[in-house]
Length: 131
Image (cartoon, rainbow, N blue to C red; front, side, top):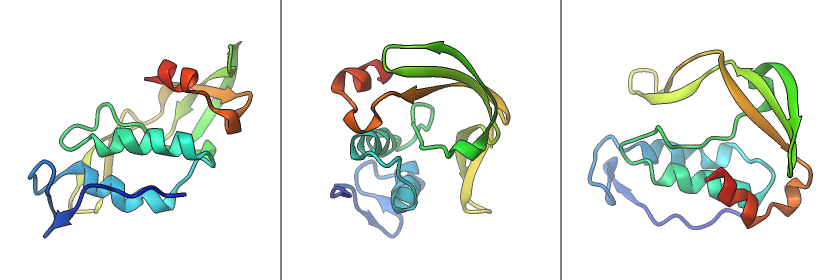
């Protein structure tokens, strides 16, 4: 279930922050093209994206499994297993207006991944740990 979005744009200008080049509009347009399969996780990720008007450093995004390589399990935690991997694309840096896509940096960076024991029963306690 997709929730109603409160932000609106006229002539590509964000009415919330007033910026012509607001990052939020690019994230919003992409909401329908991905899902984690869990409404709570999707909402949590989308909320971080909806707060990224001029700063993408704190944004979360859903990354498909095939965008990681050299995945190695390093621990077992309270909510599931913890892995280390290389993220092929790297994190979002800024919007590339010429190519109409995200420009990324730190390609092939090391990241931690967590596999949840019960992803359909995501708890508020777990989300608070992520925050």
